[in-house]
Length: 386
Image (cartoon, rainbow, N blue to C red; front, side, top):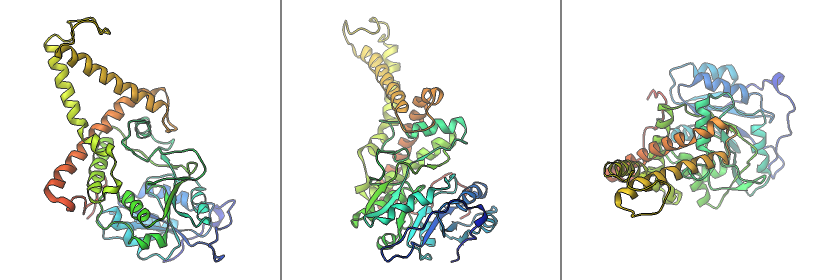
């Protein structure tokens, strides 16, 4: 495996390399799994070849793309590996088993890395207590308005079913249980100790990896200042497809590794059913006079089932919308504006609906196949060659 061309003329203000305990520099690589996304990958590689940290190797694990991915890698001097895998976990493993680095940084092929991104991750490994470190990710400024609305929904308080995308706690380096694979770095010795990513994992592979590493007693941290701009899916079909995939893959992963499960993942599976029941109750209540028997905004009078069905359902809907607005307004997305916050209830609702659909799909497959659910072909919106 060879080092990429250093592009020295494009580099400015290079920092000193971080040294290991034996006084030698860490050998560092950046690993990106990819498939059929050459144009966006070129943007990533252009940024990575200008990093302020010296001596990086960029490794691309390419799952048999049919576009010009290989040409892009050659243009930027990245190490191109032709990968036979059908999922992200196996694609990473295929490359990792060929690598001999001390630290591995991970990101995706649809990001816009800041020029000091690698430097800000690697600096923390001077502390031997740091087993892995990551950072937040938000939609880039270049994203269209709809994608920024999705980012605000991802990063809202109260309503996000435990997602880490917008996690931005206070402090310089904060303990955490999971860093998304789009913005993180690991010690290779820890990756080898847990046998890398879980083979065959079709989603939530980064969550499972972090759980395995913590099982061995290693500590994970987040640097809230090291933000990775990561493109969001646009509304509505791509956005909802991604959320369905998230719900499905996370629930099948929870089945196989119960320690990564949280109550919110299960609760969101009931959201589509509760929504349907609420609509039926509202319609039935209106049909039987629940909207006209008593003055609105009053608790006086008899609370018949018709009145409860109408006023109770509308009250819960109002609470949901209010929490969505409040959560968006005080959330962490840098794209909060009057427009994006105003549309937050719609985007949060669509996310809950689609995620819940994915959870229900996972429940059906788990009943049918048990532990075999969630193994095999990656679930995403990419055009897959294999």
